[in-house]
Length: 94
Image (spheres, rainbow, N blue to C red):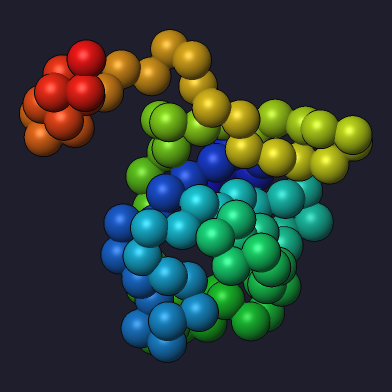
């Protein structure tokens, strides 16, 4: 993972410290930050062989921005919804 880049967890870690669907990022000091669970985890607690088997992909819906000097996920206005079910639901509303 690149530092200060937002990722979506696509596979949870075996010990469930890193959970499926969470938005996470790695800060400059190697601390893993979680949006969904509002917490942080030091590298020594998440980068353990046999437990660091989680998988991530770059987050497309949000990017890591800043608010009042604190890192915060901000919605990517250029993100295009491609999920057909979501599109169908939205069309029914309008």
